[in-house]
Image (cartoon, rainbow, N blue to C red):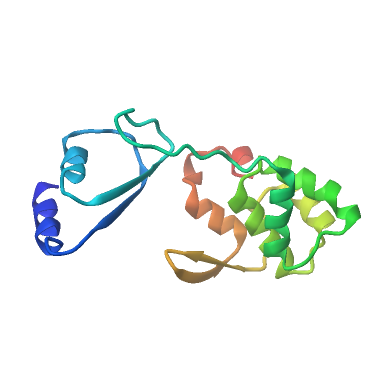
Length: 168
């Protein structure tokens, strides 16, 4: 670590640096303190609690259903009809309000012939892994990809350690 740190420090010595550390495991060890003392602006994204000595912004899941509806409509590329809200509420409950899961489901509907009702039933019966075969567009690290939502979710989460029921 220290050898790489010194090289990066040397390469960035004449510039302002914003370092974003994503999915940080929460350990504030000696290496972490080197980074903080480098003179860089540092943003740490973590699900773990870090020492109170650092400034933090606590983010919560989106709990307002209307915002989740708007998110779904945006990615489904259409307005939700009055009779579809019951099915959409079921989907939101089935994915525990997880915005990426909701986005991918909406994209699946937009790129296939599935209705909101059919998608809701498939999600409840099969989960993501076998919801539909069509590939959907998604972005990762500013690059565009196409894949099934089952593959996307499996790649994002280490699904190999989950039992078959939880993979759904």
